Length: 265
Image 1: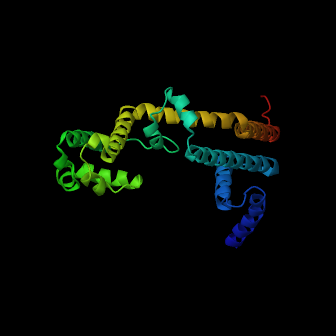
Image 2: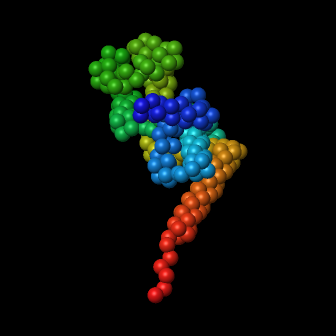
Image 3: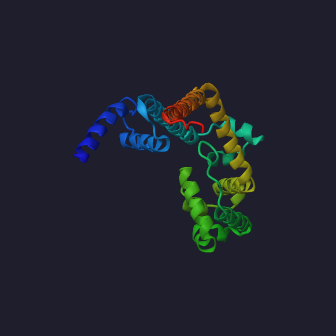
């Protein structure tokens, strides 16, 4: 018998929740929220029960606004950064070779990258100072393996055969090898530039994102809706408390009316 009554109550409250809970939301969560408010306020009568229900609905709407706003802001945070926005926030021109590490997605330089770039610069200097026979591909691969791998990759990006270039070089600075080494230096300089400004760039990227969010907040009515729901919540809460205070006072008066009066002696 008791379980049948519980099921019947669930059907009735489910009719209410169907008007409140949107597709994708969990009706059980709403009912749990409402049950907690019922436990907190212990409403008596239809008027108080209706006000507690209104509190549950308003609380649910506030949670929905919070959830929607969080999703929108998270999506905005993940949008690609614009170069001019980062430059404006940074307050200086980005080093051209470093831009692809800042926009559209900021990728901070690690200490390992910075240390590797410092070694590459030393190897570039050593290669340029070496005699012609040590600038051949076999010698470069043996003496400076890190630089050799980077040269292969850089040459491939430029549609050049690095081994052929190195094996045909006499004067490195006036050759294709010199151009490849210049590009390696530019990349290393970019890594150093980024490493020296990691924190400044992180803050600039955050400022650029904050500016984007600020524009959204100024143009969006989410905060206004949240505030209106909040005001409605506290108005309903105040009305519920007045109703409950009135009920308590009325009960006290009724008790006082039926209390026998003691006659004087």
